[in-house]
Length: 134
Length: 134
Length: 134
Length: 134
Image (tube, rainbow over all chains, first blue to last red; front, side):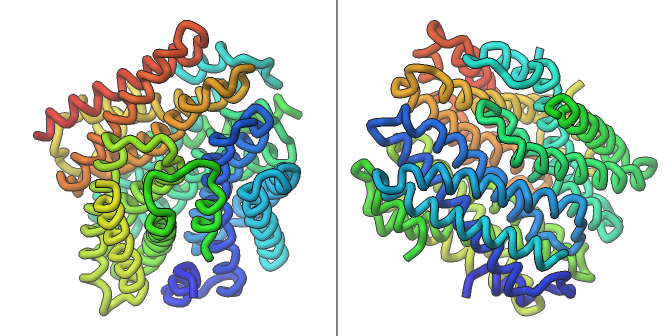
């Protein structure tokens, strides 16, 4: 069981969404931020770094937005749709773009294939949560 | 002249928005993130910390979202409305909520008054940029 | 297998340390940052928040330092002992302090017990890596 | 007067170091993190990106470490030498390395010249604070 799930199970207040859905999103955000940080490092070590510039930029954006979303979801006691909804939308959108770009390099670079997978899972988790809080 | 403005003036590509507007937003985001971090620290040192809990949570959210928005705007070469627009909307919304909460404590706590000011300026800067990129 | 390990296994360069040790540290840092963020949220929801102030502060420090260390270790291609060693020392020290503080609340608050566990594992992982790069 | 200074002047507790020295360090850290983030963006937009890879990596490390140090210094009420000293040492060391690398590109790229300046000021500020808390 992930730390996210363990922590949510001990949360001293009632959650506004299902703990399983929320924990799944938190884990997906954490994995995606980590995969994107590692993918930037790997991209910078490739010989054809010029071709990886767009991938690096999108991975940096994706790390930043996933990290912020992770923090906000962890403090969900003050759930505020006017903040959380556009943030989840921004997060799903950058995961989509970043996953698409990683897809383009997936056959050439195994690290991009793994990062694409993390982005796809995270995009889906954000969309599931957007549905759940509707 | 701020570092943000100096850096944007030397940017090797054409920007999609006016450099002055963008630099103003970057500075406002950086100030707001810093003010909110300092306000959390000050809130935690107050005797009536129980009354400051909501302020602390909103300041933490505000720091996280401002920091992410700052990073994304700094890499604006790949401007993507599907990411940047909801992110700026989330940022304006949390600056609004956090500024409103700081407002409630402004007469009692000078640090909340200063933080409110930083939140208000940042909210306006995000809305101005949303207008500029329309 | 964690994303950290998968990503390191596809890294395009030779690593300066054993991939297993490095991946273990990256995972421990990520878990600890996440547990501390969640513990802050839970502490803020407790009735006796006044007694949790020190725990909140240390968890915030621990999140910040773990996140920075995670980023630096992910870009280990430019391993530089003058940066990485003191950073790992700072990280082990904050994990120690934060773990000790969580220990004090562990019987009362299950979320602090889980967070303490994450801090202890992360402290050990940082010390193991310091040994490995000696 | 910077937000850092304003916030410190309203801090509800006695500080363990001179408010002016601390505010100067906080401002230098914030400027440096911002300059490094912008320099990464600019480096990625250069034609000779292959030659900028080391600069990009060091700027990413510098941003991460400055951001963490900024957070920890903002919560200085629990000043703990075993954490703060190695963190300031790591921060001074990465500012030194990053400043040296930016120096190499300063004549070619104005953005690296500005970033070098921010790194030099931040390195000095960290060393001054290390002296002040001795």
